Length: 315
Image (cartoon, rainbow, N blue to C red; front, side, top):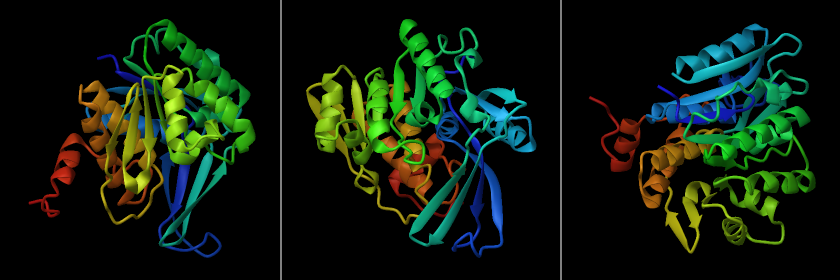
């Protein structure tokens, strides 16, 4: 079966502290993987949407782990092995019960060396949606060129494009990132962004007006992610709001990717805007309740049980 969503970008090895405290003092780390695009691909796969991911990894054990973990989730993996660069690494610490810090070691990584030539013929043209993020756009010149090539090919084939702004200040300052990410947002059909990210594109507008300006520029849907407060979908001539779910938050990293997976799966399943916002909010809330970037990404059954607020004990 041909995957319905294609995505591309860097996925890194991920080390996170097992206990609360600074890296200065903790003595135990858990090894895994993480990357915005694979988080979305895995989330979609668990929600019943076949997906594929393309990225570069180093010729090293961490690169093998990235490819193996993503493939084990059922995602169709096109991993380009780069013999001349290492797999990137990120480390997450929880200095307090209410905070998470992420450190990136990705300069010169294999993932940052993504290039247009890595895209196989027909890889994008065969799917229902191409999903990309602002992380890839800021990662390097060659990664940005690869992403632009993917967008050009998608638009040429009539494949809708989903774009998550996903701004990372460690990759570029706001005054550099804003105009560049706006350029990519204005090539997408569906745009996702938090309040600050939408304002990054239009510094002279509030988040709602920034979303409205994107819609007026020709986007079919702009989804404003509002965290615990829910989300609002901006469409031509209307706005639709869906409240969030109150949960005990353990770790918010990856919740935005789970939200995107929930929304896109709903879109592909033919749900109404209100229904897919509710699914997206549920997916994001579920992910917030456990550590890890993607491990607790829910299935459709998980989402249904969560939304019903049923007995937390499974018998």
